[in-house]
Image (cartoon, rainbow, N blue to C red; front, side):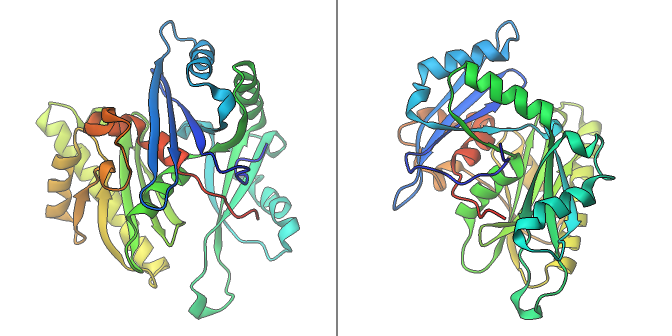
Length: 314
């Protein structure tokens, strides 16, 4: 199974995100106006058995009606930047696989590989450019396929958080400006910078949501300063590398600390920041649970996953 694959029908995805304490399931359908959130649901592990929670989700959500897309967690894959090989399209993945053999923390023969192109500035011609390569262990992919098959989910696609966040960022685009979007979870922070629906840059930040929520003022200040420094470095790198894209602001994904984080970043960054309310870009009428920032934070990545459109196959 490819990590990225074309969508095969127009009925919308059911997105499954296995978190530390349970399974998030969401369904979003595209419309002529805002995408419509059909449902969100959470299935706790209870005794810790993710397989049984997945089976319960499949039964309660009538999984047979949907195609399923599964979101990996940050520790389940590697996202690496490589120079785009000068080879025909049908040889691209083979060439990238060869370049990755000394970059992975496991043997290349044990890896499932996919690639994401980073578009060039059209005004500078066909100079060398970078690509993202996604690598996951074959064993993990096979285990997930088996688990979803046992639960009777029609697993069609496996995706990653960077692309899920890119999907939400696309809804924020206005005019020709790029979008910077920052989220936090139990896995840490994720900063993505995108333009015209394409992911140009992503950075992981080694600060978790729980750390930002600490009541220890000295610790919190340290975490906020670390986040600010990582964002500033990333923005500086983006400006040097992609000078043809102008960022208008930094959007902060909903969370319990988003407002406080915005205040700190506004005081320390040259780029303005705002707290994102998903209700401004998604039709959430059917899902009153998404009124709160905490619930928006829990389902943020699975909603982004469910927003998936067809990807170009490289």
